[in-house]
Image 1 (cartoon, rainbow, N blue to C red):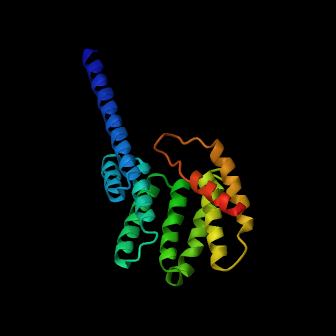
Image 2 (cartoon, rainbow, N blue to C red):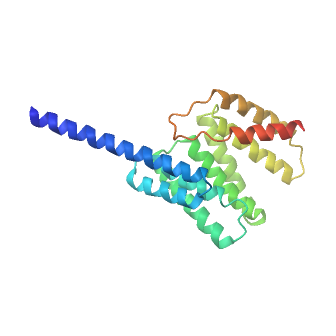
Length: 207
C-alpha cells in the first residue's frame, strides 16, 4: 500500500511540475510577443509544442505569429519561409484538434497572407479556400466572435478590392462585438484576440 501511495504522489508531482513548466513557458512566450519579439516568441511556442505534443495551442500560436509577420513582407523568399512554417504548424494543430474553428480561422488568415502578398498569383486559387475555411468554422461555432469578425473583415477587404460597398459588412463586425462581450476563453492561453480590431473597424464604419 505504501508503494502505491508513493507512486501516486510521484505521479501527481510529475504532472503538477509539467503543468507548471507549461504555464511558465506560455507566459514567457506571450510576454516576448507583447514586447514585439515575434521570432523569439514563435521559437518559444515551438519549444513548448515539442514538449506538449497533444496540445494544439502552441502549434496554433507558431502559425499565427508566422502569419502575422508575413503581412506587409516584400521579400518573397522570407514570406514563403514564414508561411510554409505557418502551414506546417496549422497541419500539426489540425491533427490534434481536427474540428476546431479557431484553427480554421487561422488557416483562412494564412491563405489571406498569400493573397495579400500577390493577389494576381494567389487570389484565384486561394480565395475559395478562405471562404470554405470560414464557412466550416461558422457551421461548427457560429457564435465564435473571431469567426464572425474575421469573415466580415475578409468580406470587407474583398469588397474594397472590387470597388464595392463595404457598409453591409459593418453590421457583421458590430455583431462580432456583441459576441466578444460575452465570450469567455476556455483558459487564459486560448485564443481571445480580435475585439480591439473589431472596435477600430466599427469606428471607421461610422466615420
